[in-house]
Length: 74
Image 1 (spheres, one colour):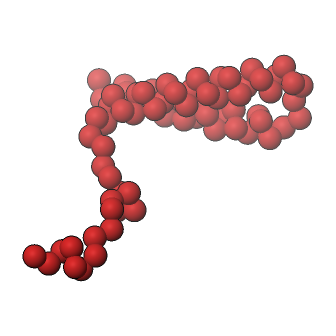
Image 2 (image 1 turned 180 degrees about the vertical axis):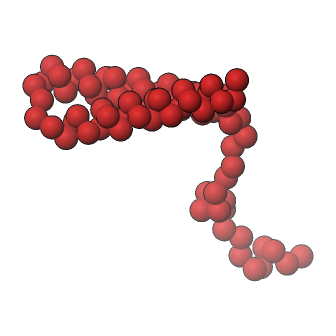
Image 3 (image 1 turned 120 degrees about the vertical axis):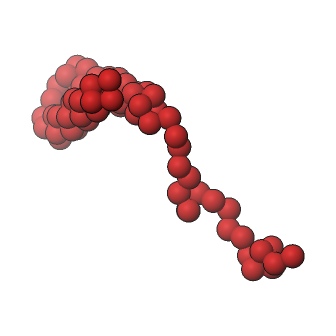
């Protein structure tokens, strides 16, 4: 199951990269709207799959509140 999820994540990421490349090309308004919608759908799908596959969330140090030395000492 884990290997299948990784393969699905890889497929979604590949689609996202392809859509981003397409958006850099010359497109009609209708084509651009379609690709932007598909890009949004792919991003939502990969985010949901990643959170399902890797349920543990890590907080990066930049997201933690800074503690001063005065707060650290009793």
